[in-house]
Amino acid sequence: MSSSAMDWLRQLLHPEACPARTGSLDSRHAGDVAALHGHGGFARGWEPGECAALLADASVAADGVFTGHASRPAGFVMSRRAADEAEILSIVIAPAHRGNRLAANLMSAHLSRLAGRGVGQVFLEVEEGNIAAERLYRHLGFREVGRRKGYYPKPDGSRTTAVAMRLDLA
Ligand SMILES: CC(C)(COP(=O)(O)OP(=O)(O)OC[C@H]1O[C@@H](n2cnc3c(N)ncnc32)[C@H](O)[C@@H]1OP(=O)(O)O)[C@@H](O)C(=O)NCCC(=O)NCCS
Image (cartoon, rainbow, N blue to C red):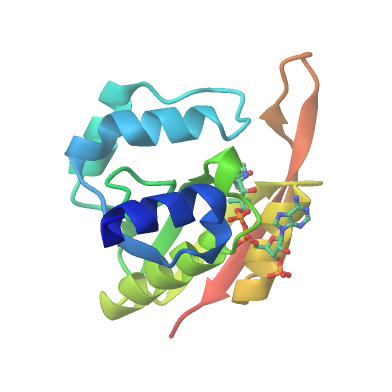
């Protein structure tokens, strides 16, 4: 068996053991980002056209995480910059790849990239009770700076609280 076939088999049997790469995304990845966002459990989906516009926006930075030899990302993170601040717009890891520290690696790479471009503070909102996301952000050094009641609309008509968080990079 060739080494690439061995790698493919190893990735299939043990996806958690394969190294992950991160890399910037552009408008060619709009379909992948829209599909991944659809797995995020958010009330409103992102259309591919909307993703293409975001990915082409000079104030937006997007990175993907790729497992094994995959050419399509297993997850993405996107932020928008204004002056020396940035806001995380979304981060999603495909359900089959969760729990393998892909989000932690992806966020670290993205934050390094933002810091390298002179961003000093990063903000985000996370739904209260999203344990995985809250742990991810706290692990990276984000701290709670406020709460917004009734921020997220739910399919049943109710609304839930957003936890606002900030990370100082400078
Ligand atoms: C949040 C999300 C991006 C995390 O991705 P992931 O690759 O599974 O996360 P990691 O494996 O890098 O783990 C990051 C942290 O979350 C914790 N975690 C991951 N899955 C968890 C779960 N199901 N329950 C509790 N904690 C969990 C890990 O233990 C780790 O915490 P630690 O650093 O304190 O050990 C992923 O669950 C996801 O895509 N969720 C849907 C979209 C979403 O909610 N995005 C955030 C919007 S604000």
